[in-house]
Image (tube, rainbow over all chains, first blue to last red; front, side, top):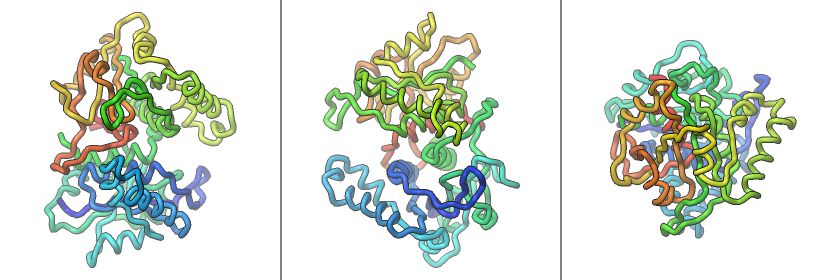
Amino acid sequence: MRRIAVALVHYPVLDAEGRHVTTAITNLDVHDLSRSCRSYGVESYYLVHPIVAQRQLVDRITDHWRNGSSGKRIPDRVEALSRVRTVPSLEEAMTAHGNGEKPEMWVTAARTLGSSIGYAEARARANAADDARPLVIVFGTGWGLAREVVDAADATIAPIRAAADTGYNHLSVRAACAITLDRLFGEV
Amino acid sequence: MRRIAVALVHYPVLDAEGRHVTTAITNLDVHDLSRSCRSYGVESYYLVHPIVAQRQLVDRITDHWRNGSSGKRIPDRVEALSRVRTVPSLEEAMTAHGNGEKPEMWVTAARTLGSSIGYAEARARANAADDARPLVIVFGTGWGLAREVVDAADATIAPIRAAADTGYNHLSVRAACAITLDRLFGEV
């Protein structure tokens, strides 16, 4: 499998009125996405936040699990959280994951944003040969990724929907990331 | 589609040593699972907790969203949370969802528990004709559902795994429920 990373972006994202905002770190985003990443073989999980105190909060959470009593109680949580990295910008996540190469970048969205690739194509491309370019799959918090992030991406994955027309796809980012990784890397 | 419910059980579930315990309500379980249920057309989401104060906590959360300022700010959250029901036992969830009929009950587990049905079969059966018996899909908190719940079920769905052998499937219940509903009711 090619080298895969997930990035969770807290800036630049949108609020309900479409303005650029910075969202706060949610503790369970750190846990849930790292566990999903570890389960599906994703190498690194980048929490992207421009504010140093928020990155330190994430580092304190992961340190607590790596070195505190909780990690002894739930060792599998330590293994998942060891994939967490904090970075101030998406560019730094791309550079870190690329490790000298320029990674491919895919964005996810609950809304249809211009042309997008379906999950069958995304799955085939995500499971390309080991020497394919590294891939970063980007998720937004708040009301979704800012337009400039979407425009800078190599591909947008089509929104997650039910087979039936339920008229609703407001999933949490914890649910959306889990479903995306399962659609790309799950057992069939 | 037949009438589907999700039940999230806080008792009887297991702790790390396999003892019976009661777990605490997690706020984001209320939100995330209700949003996943609404997205995939699940009719009701039962939070099963034997302690009245814990059920009241859930009711206060849903009341806050239905009647408070947050619901005006994020109307789609109101729609999801309107599917939440609190019940003291799984039996009461079955009775409520059955509405006079005896529902079918499926359990989910991260471990292999005796014979289980794969997702292809589960998807076919979950999407049976509208007049098929109602179905309740049960998730456990803590270290998973107690043995007597598993034994009482009509079927156990096979554990969620990656296509690659990652040696790890410790997903959060928020992730596991999202993936299960997507595998049963997601667009393909």
